Length: 417
Ligand code: TRP
View (cartoon, protein in one colour):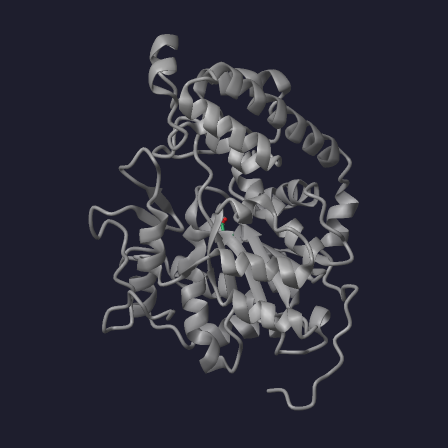
């Protein structure tokens, strides 16, 4: 497994947007011609990451003494880099930390946005480690038609939805780039060290930037890379620069971290480890894109019970037969059925899910009943989220966003770099 797999001889990645007929997967675009969605096995080969296999899952279960989260068990988190290193560290009772983030481009968050946070919450509970969450209001200012005040405000509002996922304030630091950069010398210093090591040619190769992209965009990847290094958070890690980082994220964010892993050894830093997820499909099917501006493309955390019911019934793409007779004769296709896909994300009960899969595929279970089960689960999840979100005050957000030491102690190490 090498990070340089897929690189051409200039050190850039050949996996450029639009380079061929293959699926397009980068931080700004995800598209495929297949109704089944992106070919994730091919993506692993192209990106040079490693498939999460049964042996790794068993090792996680053995190390933690707990069954793994269903998102891991069901292959929704399907790819990794250096997870073995994190388990080595954990088994030796040495520290590591978690890093994830969100680009605050809209107030409306949909269920797909919550997936990495739901999983990260499980990781935090299971491994009992610090977590840093980056809100890239600077990124969204650079890329979208939004003012700095708007993206900064969205960061604050999105933080409430993130906090509502249940994170522990004693273990979690949430920061907006715009706010934290102005009072953290270590943040800017880490960025400068990264910027010095990446050429324009390399970012062009990795991200597909063109000569007409703003220099803000071109320098942004260093800002997303920086939190992968513990030296960026002297408040949390007492100046320790040797604490390894694990990043749970959707696989479209991988280009940032290929770049990060490439520069890490030259900075005398550890490469961050990664756990990659697949994408959450739009209601209309894995081929179409969910968009925060199209309320019918997904279930939003603000949807009412009635909206959830109507959207699933009306818009969730069905893999079932066109008529009852046809469905009974040929059965449903779970691979393209969005309601079934959503159940794999949200139904916890493995046995029931397997029963649904079998009976739907055989034609015994109708699309309407399948949708009903999904509607109930979503109404419950969204309802609980709505309640927790309402309890998050501005003051709580400020507590999470205050640069500070967390509940973990980091005694200095003598032979460190
Ligand atoms: N660029 C990400 C987005 O647009 C936000 C982000 C920043 C992020 N740092 C991250 C996502 C680390 C995952 C992991 O959503």
